[in-house]
Length: 138
Image (cartoon, rainbow, N blue to C red; front, top):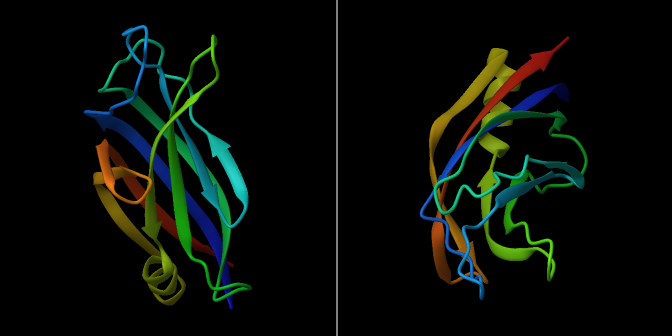
């Protein structure tokens, strides 16, 4: 078993679609979850469908470790002060092979690319650009 640091690069969004009855620009943000540990991006105020975040988040990761769910879940939301935040959709990235390669070689990377944001497992709601890097420790 090995340990290391999983670094998630949340770069941008493209064509994000949220229902806003007042027809104002959306204020997107992303909740990022890895094995029950959560991080939250900044709210991209009035960014509309094409926000830019350029943020990095770190998670301590074990491989093979306990539990078999090696996914990073991105929950894309629209911040709304008046009637509560609105769900836009999800992205799920499997990092099992990334972790296995990183433990073997000392590091591994999923270069930044666009991932489809899907609502309720069927509706396309835009894309987010994400990269993931893993560095073995010890």
